[in-house]
Image (cartoon, rainbow, N blue to C red; front, side, top):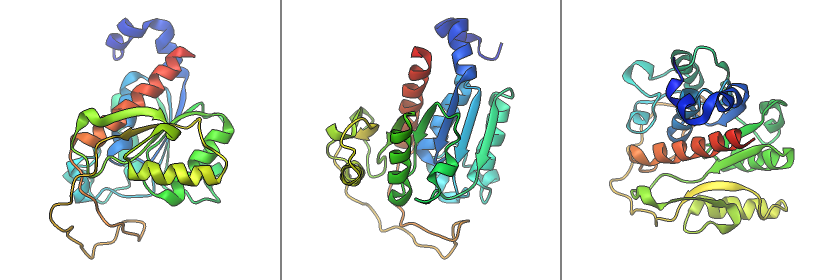
Length: 241
């Protein structure tokens, strides 16, 4: 049985809760791809994934969907095909679009019960968090995993209690400007940023959406740990319902 080991742990009632759950994952990069993998392997029955980007060669060091064979393909497509191999009975809706401030509501299905924010673009991240918060959806938001090496530095806490994380600092400030000072659960690292190594290699190859961000140093295991922690938090939320 595909989920027999999980059922030994959570029971048939727990498996039914997971099969009935509707979980949205926003961002399928280093963090989001591992979170999605864990949700699918746990038996979550309804998955909604949103990402605008395509797989690039530089993703291979940290994204579970990134292989030589998937370079150039939309991340949402690769992720959906992977889930079909892991849990064929899962319903998967994959949307390859950029979340803009004025389109957030369109990208959060009304039946969403749980969500993981794994977006690293502030212009998308803040309005998404605000919408999830105001909608009463159970969610967790992932802060920065780049420029870190210590796997023991990750914490789960309210956004108001975060420290040392530059991304969390920006998110905290922007949410405060919107009247949100607490009630946003997040994963962040208390490790101080590692000093940059070599200067990033800038290529002329455009990302599939026509945009390119300045790359930051990352290591294989840090985004993975953050993504798995996010999935673990949501899976426990589902089982406690």
